[in-house]
Length: 283
Length: 283
DNA sequence: CGGATTTTTGAGAATACTCAAATGGAGTGG
DNA sequence: CCACTCCATTTGAGTATTCTCAAAAATCCG
Image (tube, rainbow over all chains, first blue to last red; front, side, top):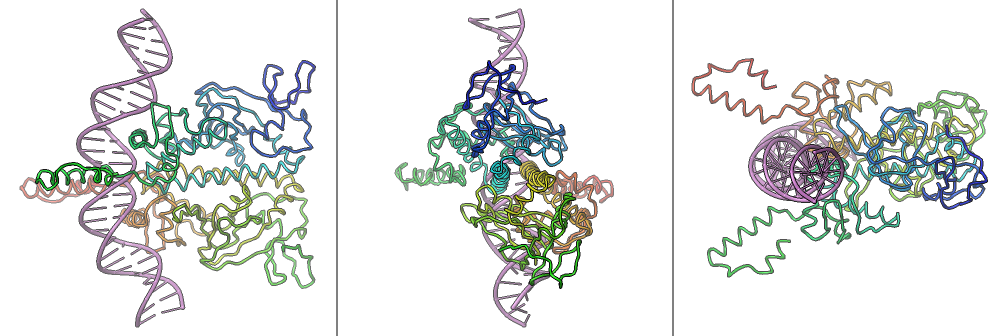
C-alpha cells in the first residue's frame, strides 16, 4: 500500500520540506527524524525511503481501538487526542499529541491498537509503516537507539502523568497542565505564554481526572488570582513560576472565616475598619 | 564488568535452570526469553551469551534516580517497588514488578534512571547490559520485535493505570488492585486466590492515589461484604467477579438513614420490629 | 521483651462531585 | 441578517467521598 516512489522529473528536490507527488505530500527520513528531534543517520540516502502524509479533518478518527496495527503516525501539524474507552463506555483521555509526537506505539504489543486517536483540529500526519520502522532500525544502527529512546520517553512521560494524577490537587493539576502545554507550544516555536486550547473543559477534565465543572472553576480561580487570564479557550500565562509550584489555592473558606471575624470585631467597635494588613493576610 | 565466561568443566550443563559459576548464577538467552514470555531465537547458541544474576536484600536499592543507566534488570524471584520522588520529596509508587517483569526501561531515554527501584523482599535479578540488549536485537531479528513488544506492553500497562487512577472510586481501585495481583500470581504459578501482600498499606495507597487509611478502610469494607478476607497481609479473594466489576460500595450512610427510619417507626410502634426484607434492602 | 512500625478505627473537615440553571458562542436555515 | 438550536462554559448550592488528625491495637524485629 505504501510503495516507495522513485523520484520523478516533475518533483522539485527539497530536503527540508515535504514535497508533492501522486497527489500526496511525502517526507524523507531526514525530515521525519528532525520532526522527532532525533539525530538523522548520516548514511541515509535522501530519497531512499519516503513517508506519505495523510490529512484528517477535525473530529475524524485516525485509528480505533481493536483495529489491526501496522502503522505508526507522526503529527506534522494539528492537534489530536488519544482516548481509552472503559468497560462502561466512558471515554478517558490519555494524551494530547501535537507536532512531533508519535502515535500508535500501544499497538505494537498485541498488533492491535489499545487506544483510539481522534483529530481535535485538521491534522497532517506522517505515516510510518511499522515494517519500515523496524527495517530502518536494522539498517541504521543509530536509529535503533533513537527508537528505543522515543519509546522510553513515552514511558517516562506516562510515569509523570501517573505521579501527577495520584498526588496533586485539582488546582495543581490544572496549573501544570497549562504550563506543560505552554512548554510544548514553545518547543514548537509558538508562544508559550499565550495560546488557544484546542480541547474542551470536558476533555481536559477527563485527562486530569476531574469533572469539567472543577476545571472551569479552577481556571476561573487562577484567573481571579492573576496567575492566568482566560477567555473561553484563550489562555495567557501570567505567572508561570507560581503555576509550576502551586500546591493548593488559598482556601475560599479561610477567607470567609477571616472576614467573619473581622466584621465581628468591627461590629464590637474593636477594630476601626478594614486594613491592608488583613487584606494581605487573607491571600 | 560483565564478561561472558566460557563454559568450564566444573559447570554442569543445564539449559533450563541458571547455573553457578565464579560464585554467581548465570542464565542463558533462552532462559531469559522464557522468563519474559517471548519466543527465543532458534538460532541462539545456548552458551553464547550469559547473563549474570545479582541478589538484593529486602529494602535495598536496585537503582536510584539520576543514576547513570547502562543495565536493564529482569526479576527472577522476589518483589520490587519502583518509585518516583517528587519535588517535595514525596515518594510515589509507580509499579510493583515481580517475576518476569523488566526494570530500568525509563533510563534509556536520558541514559539516566528516571525512577528508583527498591526490593520489597529478597530478590534475584538478572542483569542485561543495555549494549548486549541492543546488540542481540541486531543479531536475532525476532528479538528486536520482541523488545519493541515488551516496551509497548509497558506503555499499555501505564495507560491502563492512568485510566484507573482518574476514573475509579477508592473501592474500585483497591478491588482491581487485588484482582490484578491475583492474576499475576496465577501467571507465576501460585494461587491467584490466596496470597500475601508484600507491600504496606502506605505503598498500596501511594500506588493507587489514596491514603493508607482509605486503603485499610476499604479492605475492611470488602472483607465485611464477604468479597475478600483480610488478615494483615494475608488476602483471600472470595468473589473475583464482583471485585472486577465493582464501581462503588453500597454507601454506609444510606444504611444508616434506613436504619434511622426503621428505628423511628419502631419507636412509634408502627413497625413491630426488624425484618429480613429490610435487611436485604439495605445491601 | 521493648521499641518501632504497621494497621485499624473514629471523628471531623475539606476537596471535588452532582445536579441544576443561566449565559454565551458558533453554526444553520429561513 | 436574525432567530433558532446546539454545544460549551460558568456559576451556585448541596452532597459525598476521601483526607487529616488522633489514638489504640497488633505485629515485627532485633
